[in-house]
Length: 313
Image 1: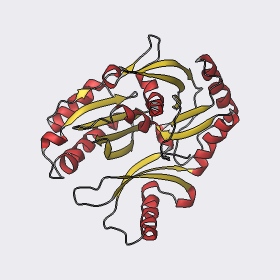
Image 2: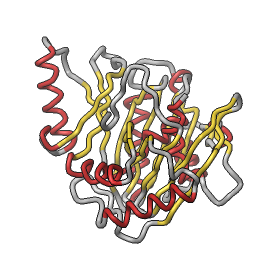
Image 3: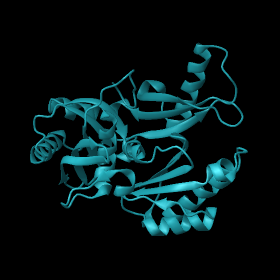
Image 4: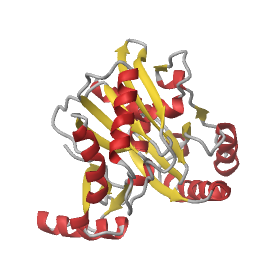
């Protein structure tokens, strides 16, 4: 199964890998009545420039070195014999977007043609260069069809799959990092905002009734993050929260999850309050049902792989 593919009654493993430019983290979850606990986990620091996340360029400088380090971190977590994995790729390696159709296609063939054209515009590459998976969303307020599309260049995906094949891993689910982190905020009632920060910028995801209302990947310098987030919050306020005719009570931004370096959680909360006149609950691991171990592993490192591991239940 490829990027963001879904099967009927899929059986995902409780083990997952999270990759970032600076580290790799493996996790194995247990599920209980009170939420999830970390059964096994470990992280390893990657050498500088070994993994250079990019949508358009080569990502892995030395695949043999990466294979060795991933084998090392799996062994250190007691997961050396684990063969089935889900994987959260670095955020800059893949792109996600919401596609809206201006009119209903007359046929399946016309739908595929329109989507193919929109993929090329959204991802800046031809369909033959991409692996694109999509999920149909609920229609917007005007009744137009919407799709969540996740794309990755075939050449980039091949790099990662070659590493996993060399390790003998069966990677049934491969997603960009923010999709794993979003598993912690898929709750009905009110809106949730996920800010997934990374060295190249950040991804913002607004979820409403368990479905994405906004997905926006922003590549920017550190000093421009506040301005970019402010623009996104204005778009949410003017086009999503109040632009669909739904009452403010339903669309109130109730939950805020900030993951990764680059943003201070309290600062983001204040920016949200100033822009939206809302005070969402800033979520901590306990709020989303994850009990962290007492060692040095942080939620920032665990959020994406652990989120994918929850799909086992």
